[in-house]
Every structure is written in structure tokens, then in C-alpha cells.
Length: 507
Image 1: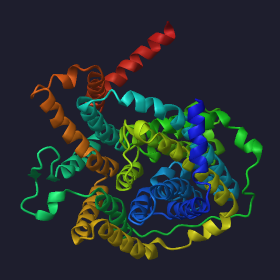
Image 2: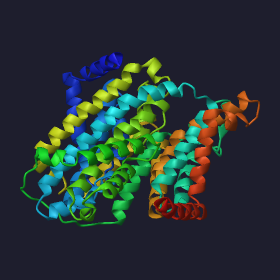
Image 3: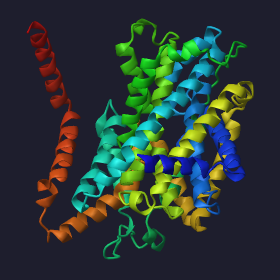
Image 4: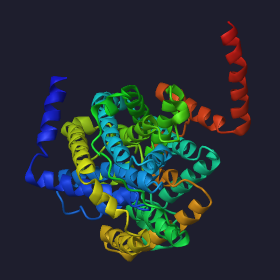
């Protein structure tokens, strides 16, 4: 514990320089603006910024990316409250109570509560990040090729299951498409080219950043071109700075939502939107004012904003210790870390233990920054919402093209970006989730290499994949996840619990 506190102190002090504070300020503010503008997501912002940080020192580059990530998730609450349009998917639950509060003349109070709730949610997540990550990194040292294969498969499947609750099959299909895209190019064990179809440019595989920029950026441009919308901006001059009683009144909801959000972040690929909805649902079930939810409930607003912000530190737990992204934006951060010479995974605490605490320091400083900006620049940030998003899309398109080209300076990556943009747009129109697709590309290499390495170690015997203790547990979880997504099995399990519940009450 003393060593951890010392590393944490060094992690915070490392960024208390003029350069660090300047990068923290502009990246946080940019993130808030990106999050506030409907159509500009946190993942898109992080992916585009990665392409602009190549020449920066690694620590400052990660600082900028993390600050933008946190700021964008928080910034989505602005448009959710004032326009009833979530700036990012993470803020969808915020619209349910934020907009009714704004219509009732309490827009300032709603934005103040959203700001403090986001800050407290991040702090809860930070606590668990500092507590769990070192232990999980030590435990992950027991993992071999067999375990990492199942872990990668679990990440893709659970992401597909939780991001497409109404139709898990669509989530699985999106994840499999991502895995297939990851198989393209030269494989790592024998340098054999697969699925290139004679195209030499495909020999290097599909680069993650152009694929992600296309799926989240160019696809959104196409969606905006198809669907134009008008919305009424609600403004008011009421108090923005929340009273202490407003913050402390729902402390149980804050802690509960922070824990739920952190757990959602730990599950690979789930993301902030699921964390927000899960926190909102848990708060509604436990609330004495459940009938007010959706009608302007402060408790509902607190739950949604605390939950989505707590996902960010939670997502960094598997990202740093297992190299499994806890969210779509965390997948981009993994790519950025490798670009800057940082290797996330089980060996991180051995090779670079200070980096974990630098991430904790970044999250703490960014929480302070968004709180200050959110409470002091409310009127200025509201004016950002007056910019028509149709006028922003040409700028986004230029950034998509330049960002994709800047990675390797070849036009092929621009074509990859456009292709994934078109694929992403079509999949969105058919209501397929994007997170499993991107996660499949990220985890495809991990799954492929560890499957074949495990088979080499066992001389072609698949038994170790099912008999080693950790592998057996992961396989069982995956099997249950798939079975529970089948409508027939799900209905029977639900019926069984309904029959057992009256029996327990009678007993």
C-alpha cells in the first residue's frame, strides 16, 4: 500500500507541469465540445486525435487522449439535457430526466447535477481501478495461450450480447465480421499471407485506426446526410452550481451507480451506454421515487451520469492488465499505447508499474478539469450547440481522411476508412452494433495467435483448452452466455425463476 501511494503521488506530480496542464486543459475542453455536438462520439474523437499525437512524448499523448475521452463522455450530457438528443450514446439515459428538468426551467441545475455526478462517478471508478488493477495484473500472469484464446473470444461474445440485447445474434455477427477482418494479412507465426486475394496492400492486414475512423466517423457522416433533424434548444438562467444538499441527498445512488458503471467497464467491449442504462435501471428499482423517473427525476439524472462516467476507469482495468478493451474508445487507446511504445497486458506492472498510476493521475486531474469547465463555462458551451452539425461534417470528413492517411502515408488506408464507413453505415441501418465489430478487429490477432500457439504446444491436442482450470471456467461462461441468448433457453430459465419465486415467498 505505501508503495502504491508513492507511485500515485509521482503519477499525479508527473503531469503538474506547464506542458501537462496545458495539454490537460485543451484536450478536456475539446472532449466536452465533441461530446456535446450530436454525431461526434468519444470514440471518433479519440481515434482522430491518435493520428495527431505521433510526434508527442508518450506520456503527453496518452494524457491528451484520456482527457478527451473523459471530457467527451461528460460533454454528451449538454445536448441530452438541452436538446433531448444525446451527444454520445453514453448520454442516452440522461435525456429521460435531463430534458424534462430543462423544460421545467431547471436546465442550469440539471447541468450542474450532471457535472458533479460525472465527477463523482469517475472518482468511484478510479478507486476500483487503483484497487483492482494491480491484483488483476498479478493474477493474469497465470494466463497462457489457452486462457488468452478464451478471454479474447469471451470479450467479443459478451460485447455482442450486451450491445444488442434485443437481438444478440446481430451482436455476434458483428463480432465475427470483426474477427474475419482481423484475419486478413500476414499471420504472426509462419508469415503466411491469408485472404489477400493477390492484393499486395492487404499483406499488412487491416489497420485498426482507419477501420475505426471509418466505422465511427465516416459512417456517422453518411447517417447525418441521410437524416436531417431540427431540435428546440432549451435555455434558462437558473443556478448552475448545485447545492451541497442536492449532491449528498442521493449518495446511495451515487455509490451504487458508480459500482454498476465500473463493473460494466470491466466487461470487455460493453461501453458507457450500457453502464448508464444499467445504473439507471438499478436506481429505479431501489428508489422510493420510482414513479418520478422519466419525468424530471434528479435521482435518475444522477444515476445515468454517475454510471456512464464510472465506466471509463472501469474500462481501463482490463485495458491495462489484460490488453482487452473495456469499451470502443479503450480499443483505440490500446492501439495508441502500442504506437507510443507502451505494452498493456499482464507484464505492465512488471515492466512499467508507474504507468498504471499515471493513468490514475490523469483521470483525477481530468475530473477536476471537467468539473471546473462544466460549472464555469456553461453559457459558452451552450452556444456550441447552436452550430448545425451538417456544417461540421465536412470538417470531420477531412479529419477522417487526413487521420487515416497520416498513419502510414499510403492511400490504401484511406480506402480502408471509406470501406469500413460504408460497411458501418449499412450495418447501422440494419441495427447492428458497431462495438463488437471493432472489438473483433482488436482481439482477432490475440485470438488467432493464441489458438494456434496453444495447438502447437499441445501437439494438436485441444484437451488443454477445456481441462486447465481457468480455461474451463472461461469456456463454461461462454457456453452459458451463448445458451442464454437463445430465445427458447432464455424463456425456460425465466419461467423457472417465476415458478421458484412464489415458492420461496411461501416458504
